[in-house]
Length: 124
Image 1: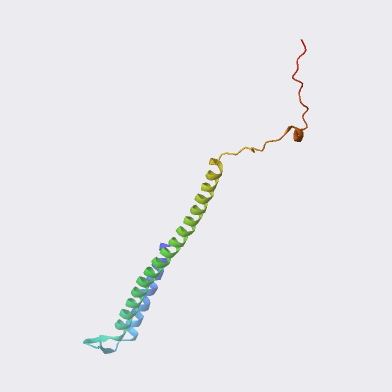
Image 2 (image 1 turned 45 degrees about the horizontal axis):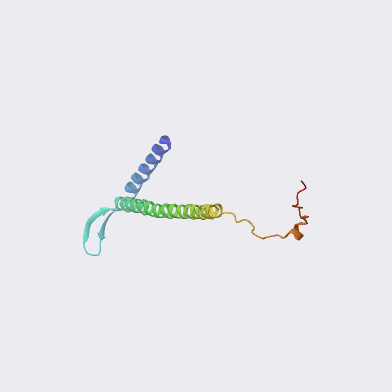
């Protein structure tokens, strides 16, 4: 990776040197409110290119940070919803377990149970 970066830097340096040597004419720059002294056109092109790359990188970092925060918020919202659902489910289970089981308190008669009465007379 470092080797690729070194090659890329040499290419950029060679390109900027070519721009300066090819565009050697002097040009006056009007900055609306002030007048800059006459500059070499190639140097002006390199300066504008450098400022454009710098501003673009700063904006892309800022934009990436915004997207990264949105992704993190979305992930945390999903996790929060999952945990809320799990909490609700656990509360329902606790509610079910804490309710005592109510025994059926219906009274059955002897006839319904088909029970013969017991002779309570005793023989002595």
